[in-house]
Length: 148
Image (cartoon, rainbow, N blue to C red; front, top):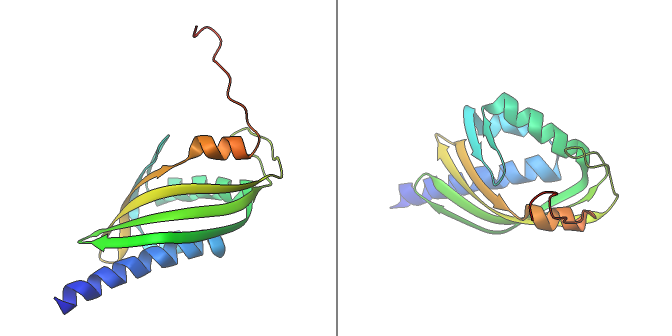
């Protein structure tokens, strides 16, 4: 039982280091350190295959979001899985998918399930409030033309 508990604590520690390295320290190398080469990310609006694609997309978020700080609200581990509930705070200071910088602060809330193997992240499922983020940085919802 102690060995199993130790593995669960190590897995939680990997995810904490991942989040803090990624957003508080803003280190791209944390991905090489803690993700598997063939990591797969399943997001609410995209799937990412492999660490190189992940780094490319992550760099675009680093450029768009400045003064970032992540707060882990809850972290749970079971078997090879770790679930986190977190909030990312920052300022939209760079272009994001064609959206020009607004200088507005945001708080992005989400849930992520990680699957680990030998202390590395091999798969990630994430649901975060993309609509809330867009509204916080000043975007407006509009009905698509021709969809009446």
